[in-house]
Length: 185
Image (cartoon, rainbow, N blue to C red; front, side, top):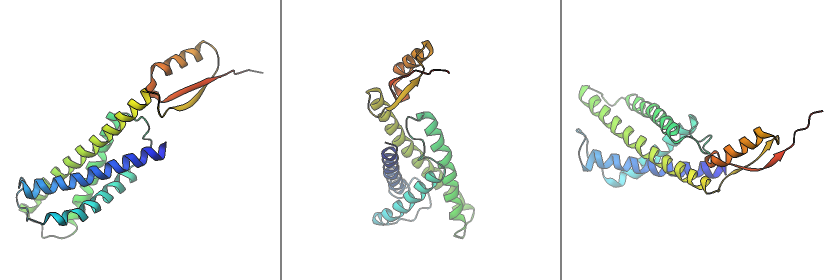
């Protein structure tokens, strides 16, 4: 189950990142929203989109975005994606500057605009992907799919209250299979 969650999230992120790179191309060249862009052929966008997707997947993996995916808070996950995508974008921006491309005041301003638009697309699409996946997971769990088996240690009133709480909150992801009587010697 954990491996399946990771693969689905990873695949969805990869698609979102590739789409984001292509949308960035459209914004930059087709719509000409960003000034100073030199036209490139659309066919030359695919390989860079794969390279950028691998870059982002590595950044996300490094910062733990593929750990503990089961029923995580959607809000918390979007906040984490936002923070990590800012770090990744700054790293990407830094790598551009170390490439010595004769930076001056004009192209630095353009680079900032490019970077912001690219970050916004990346953050939005990856967040949307994760929101869709986590919402689908929650809906499945509410229907009784993907639950983790559990037992409650104890048979008293407290154990019964815990059982009732778990049944009321199906999104906890637990399927109580029984109670274990705890005897003291």
